[in-house]
Image (cartoon, rainbow, N blue to C red):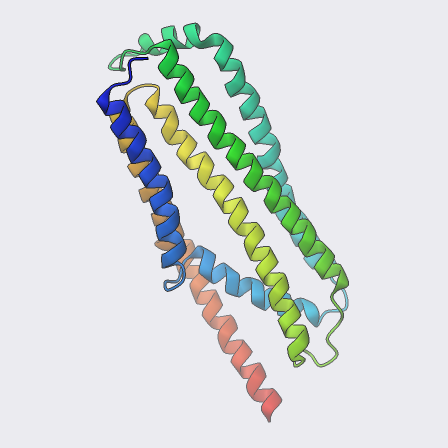
Length: 244
């Protein structure tokens, strides 16, 4: 197997980008407003409001919609895995197609199989994340079904604690969904490795930049953060009115 130094460097760069960004995003989210941090606060507000409602048809519909999105990606991942596994029997044809593209690195069977194996591993990992997210949303549905109605209008601390635990379960489900989507992003980077390892490095760095821009610096983050502040102010007003 003719693995060049540039291939090894590009693969190490890919791993560093994925693992490094995941660790960086997890730490930065603890101190900086981002999609994950702000949405968690929205989920807490949502679950607190849920405890005060007698009719929860709207919440059931919203949760079903979230589960539907995850189910779509889980089933799509299985189809992609079937396609990638099929390519193992078409390595020679794939090699000929890649060789016909200008400026591509010289392909060989063993290296192509290694790249297909990496893609397979990524999508298997994505499938595990999506299915775990689906299960956690199922757990949340059970908790919502068991949640009593707060007759105090949100003043019961024990029920507020229960609402927070529901938000935590939903947050963990969303994290698993996010990790699955992130696997798709980095799988796109792996596709560039079939053409040239230098392109693989550039694409890996571009994926990190795209993820950071969307999760920390996008207009959606600004809007979600502003909404979180409004809800926090509303919550403070409610607490002040209860004291009076």
